[in-house]
Length: 436
Ligand code: ACO
Image 1 (cartoon, helix red, strand yellow):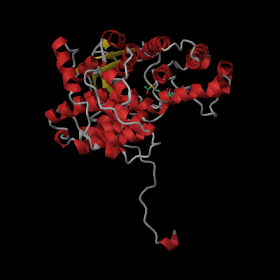
Image 2 (cartoon, protein in one colour):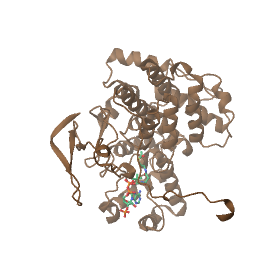
Image 3 (cartoon, protein in one colour):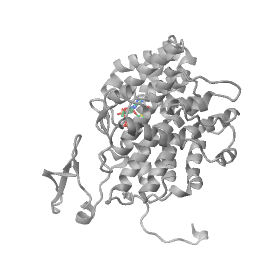
Image 4 (cartoon, protein in one colour):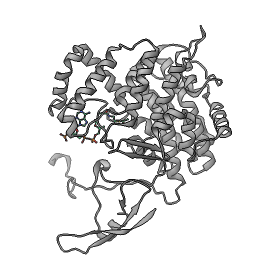
């Protein structure tokens, strides 16, 4: 951390002693005021529910400029990565800090590919779920269960264990998501095929059956690979912070990633792609493009609790750069499948146009986020709506691991333990039950 020459001074209106606080500068982005000694110096905590102004850690992985609508992984713009690299190159970048050269790419791909199978017992564990269970309920269970299957890589403080757990998680997530899908539709599981690419293998495990040959479409393979790249990391979002907090207790990597999966499920986070598509379906059912005005009116009504799903972001106060790339992929996939006139895509475009011109959205800087178009792409590929968030979890796993490893590798890391402003009852005595 580079200390700034400027210091912050905290003063109190009651004449209490001023406190000088150090300021640190990052490579880019806002400086931070170091308040770590504040409690010792003043007996006070800071109050910031929702982390509106709080940096919870130092990180060198992902940088977002929300005002510009810029996303960088290890310094590289997401647009360049999505256009010039594949997902496994992006994984290498996030995990080790650099894009691989030819040999490194070959070795890394081989390493991941050699771990794609899951322990055969996993299917019996999976069998305990109801067939109609939500895939995210299943995924939370399956990822957590990995700690019971891979005992030799559960020591989070051992760098070798962390490395093996990282590769296992990245390699096995597609297998687990595809198994969760096959289980809910009652089809036999398809074993991974290691001659295929990461995305191609996932398509194969999802859509092939033992009865006939399945040919991976290069356009769909590339589209899925792009979805994986765009979702691979997003700095200290809710699920990543959950993984860090969970991992800070020293729990094993599989348990920490399972916590991330559980957090991602929520509709304000990863569940938004499912919610966005369901919203489009609802508008379509109600009458389509003609009903957009009515829908927008509901969204603007504070009492309605209706949100324009796939719009708005805590950090982006501009167009989410991933949404632009996803819109491009959406056109490509619909073109490949002969669905150029897909009514949901048309509806989404019309909805976006109207929202972007509406004072409510303009004044609040609400723009489409990555989830606005990713649901349409996934649906076109044939992925069922409830599986969308599981695909997001699959892609985000590498980001979670990179962030977890970064935290554990930092010699100064401590267990995460926020404080509180207590507003409950002051100390009181328990009365006998007859007097309560
Ligand atoms: N539709 C309508 N109004 C919205 C929306 C929306 N999608 N998003 C924010 N607003 C409004 C809020 O009501 C609030 O209005 P007010 O100032 O009049 O009270 C204002 O915009 C600011 O919104 P906050 O909720 O304070 O913003 P916050 O940063 O807390 O929330 C969030 C961000 C949760 C993403 C929010 O925009 C949202 O719920 N969007 C829809 C869900 C979604 O698409 N989530 C995906 C996020 S991206 C991802 O996880 C990959």
